[in-house]
Length: 337
Length: 284
Image 1 (cartoon, each protein chain N blue to C red):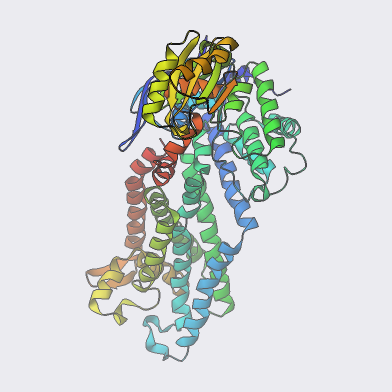
Image 2 (image 1 turned 30 degrees about the vertical axis):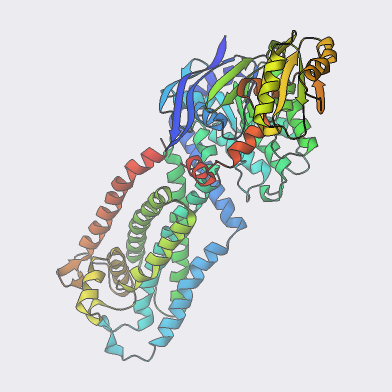
């Protein structure tokens, strides 16, 4: 039973295509992670689900509501914690929560009880009556999360909830998200932190260039890779021709699969091996063709490997690549109404 | 245990839309007043500036002959009405700034994600706040003006002043809120406020009657909305309230009190209809 269903979503900002036929299905009661580099289209997708943006085309359903036609009903069902925490610096934390309660039309008795509950749960009692302008990033994020949860939403949407947070705040937020998941709240979380998605998500999708390139349970995605991840370098600074020769050689070895040349990491080779014997015999195969092993590392597959397998680059490299191309002025403009 | 409660949403549906709108509007308005209480400098600056003008300009022309101005009033008495209107006008012109900051800092998105009964609540709360502040500032100028010996209106005059200021403040607040959605940032909005503020004042009858002005400036002053607000207030101060009386001897003809109020009303309604599609689009 799905709670969110996105079908063929397209969205462009001028010449920049943010979503390119995005399809996504989020099961009810699950914690679903969206993984991808900054600029991949995660925030745009979340803003469309939250009714802050309209897609150029496509269909969006939340809990059986057509988001584009039943905006108000959709808003009642969801809580949204944005990437950039928007708080009023002059209000105290408690006043902000009271305002939020009024915007969701909670009655006074229930509002007070719920605010107290959240203050205790998110450990905010020491500073909740101070002005928001004096809060650290972690405090602001906890307050923002409390705002998103105040009206007991069926769906909680979090856009990069732990970016730049201290360990304590991250731990509090992760703990709460796990608790909510166990309580059947549907949570959609975007992140570019691999460990966050790995730790929290029941299911996930990797988004790249505005579309889903892989989806499923994190463990299944890692298992689908078929074995352990090996990174091999035959020289400290190899070149494309040499890397391609080695790739052709390695891909024919029994027990080796998914050989990828990682240009960003000095033309190293990433591949999967079915067992340790393959690694033991690797140097013999290479020396026959006059290649040496300069460096070799071997690890259990991670989500980064899943990303690498799907895109041919690591998440970090994708971040760096997109960082140079992003137009922050345009992004700032698009986030304003 | 933090929980979610789907039945809560069904209960909420049965609530009256009007009650919900009142709840969200009063909460948004209260937020603006909390900001004002904790950062009152804008309120005091809005009172101090016209007050300084009142003291300096009244002193500057204090030795002018008694029949210098039409009606034989002193310059301080003449100036009072202009500065009351100027105070309300300046306050209303700034109405868009809090909204612009909410846009820039993403707070508006928080409001737009909420299931507001009507998104007009966002605009209405701003209008209530700015109107209250502008009237409060204008009242402070009236009291100071009275303490300086420049008179106090009758009850009818007071009523006329309130109506006139409300019409002007509604019109200018609407304009400013519209600009807050059209312009890219607060720098541009502040620039427009700076550019508009003083020239609009000087090109009105706030500081001098039309008869003192060159013809071209007289034309501008006689179509300036501030003039249509200043003259009824000046009448409320100096004569008994008679809206049939000619208040403006404009180059295009005579304008009485009723006409002044009707023009202000048309301006308010016109601006409302002008910015409504914009607000609908931006708050959709």
